[in-house]
Amino acid sequence: MAKQSVLIPLFAFVILVVILGLGFTLSDHKDLPAQRVNEPMPAFSLPSLWQPQFQITAASLDGEAALINVWATWCPSCVAEHAELARIHTEEGIRIVGINYNDDPEAARAFLRRWGDPYAFHIVDAEGTLAVDLGVYGAPETFVIDSSGVIRYRHVGVVTERVFEEKLKPLLNQFKDRS
Amino acid sequence: MRVIKPLSLVALLMLFVSGASAVIEAQMFPDDTVKARYYDLIAEFRCPQCLNTNLAGSDAMIAQDLRKTILRLLIDGKTDAEIEAYLYDRYGDFILYEPRLTPRTWLLWLGPVGLGALGFWIWFSLGWRTGRPRETALSEEEQDRVQRLLDQP
Image (cartoon, rainbow over all chains, first blue to last red; front, side, top):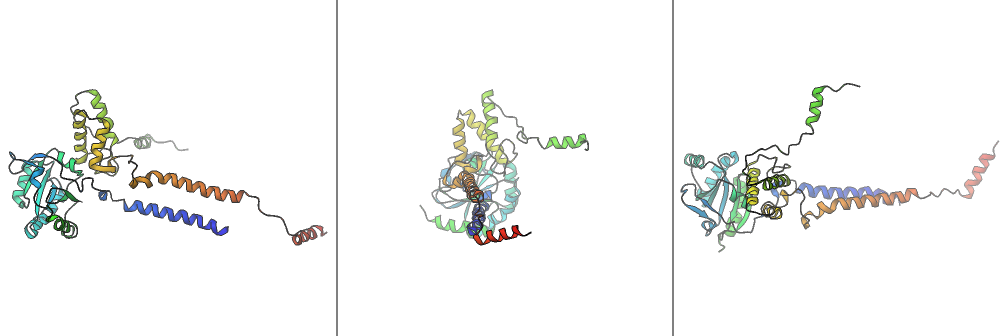
């Protein structure tokens, strides 16, 4: 009997450790599941940054696995990842589509003219409507879409060479040949 | 006892100031019903970018966008439930202060009940044992000894 009463606090402790352990694995809210993964790109019709008279739709994204990068000139982390995106485009030949999020289009064009434009094209999301449809909660975010325009992965935060090599590149290779 | 200085009192009162209406924006409301529902809804959802601020209290870009989105949906004539579903589709449990009951959230919802049950079980099993009269009866040998000690002059 005396043994059992020693075991009770031990059991309680083990249960607490399990619950708190689970809690800590959830603690990074950026790891919460992306609601849109494995769904097609939401429908949209938004102007192009370089040719504002031209409307881009979800159909423009079909045909090739690509990275969709949500960026803005007001976002320091986006500026920081620009060089890595340029490397990914030139060295790896990956198609990158930009969503210019809540930005001043003139400032965005000036930024790209100065630092180069590795993107295939930019969707101007001045009101953040496409970003909300994608479940974006801050820039930068980068999505992997397959060749039929289905979202396969979402990365929150700066794309570094390591992120690209470990997460994005394998997925791009995996979904490159889907039709 | 020391008299509380007026300044400390002000500092104390500031603890109770709510941050809920921290952001003021010029929104165009078609009527007062929409306005009232708008303020109710933006207080109800959590800002996805922030750790614990509602949409009403946050100045984050995404909170501004979601406030605009909610107003647009209200003007489109969507019900509160439809607006909740719209946001839930895009941002998931994180946006709700009361997450839905799904397998992922079972522990969250049922955990306190389980811990309460565990507590009752421990309390009950310990209480049952300590409340029971102890076996204090002395053996014959011991009683003899007690008697002898008492009988000593």
